[in-house]
Amino acid sequence: MTKPAAKPRVAILISGDGSNMVALIEASRAADCPYEVVLVLSNNPDAGGLAKAAALGVPALVLDHRPHGKDRQAHERLIDAALREAGAEYVALAGYMRVLTPLLVEAWAGRMLNIHPALLPKYPGLNTHQRALDAGDAEAGCTVHLVTAGVDEGPILGQARVAVLPGDTAATLAARVKAEEHRLYPAALARLVAG
Ligand code: GAR
Image (cartoon, rainbow, N blue to C red; front, top):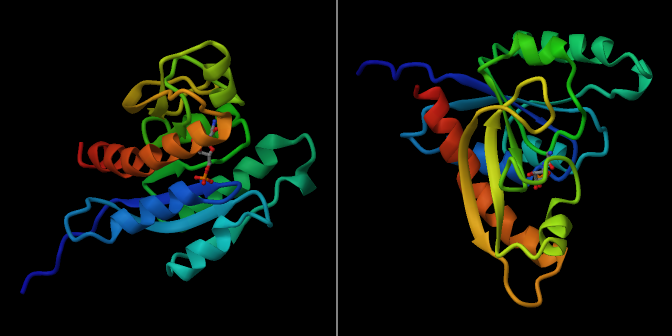
């Protein structure tokens, strides 16, 4: 039997719960998934996603940003070194809540993607669901995009939409959008790595 071809290696950056990270890893276990996840990296030692990554058998690493103070690039140099050490070819930001400097953005241009809980270009930044509700939007959703210098900018790789329902709160809307995030992100990453 011939050995299956190696799949493109993906690292995932998280800061919190890591539910999108779990979705990416679980999808990667399908035989026909074109990527594998080789590393999970968190800037937050308390991120809930770290234990989930370990439970799924993916190496999980903490690189705390706090010892570096305002020197974001010093922190990013360590991240970049860890990504290269793991042999990563793509980087998926999954609830990674640090703004990146050009150091990482340029090093991974075209190979770093992000998921954002809004239909970009609407609502970059935080509190996306409350902003959609306050604006009276009929629909909300999420976007996967390539990471470029501007926060939550960059070419869009895919979007998923949900209807805003009567009585929705930011929490109920976030939960429905999150379910779509978990479908959209693995599919968009698979399309990117498959070219
Ligand atoms: C997700 O909703 C993701 O879209 C959002 O953080 C959440 C992380 O959840 N990302 C951003 O707001 C980035 N601008 P998770 O840790 O459960 O995947």
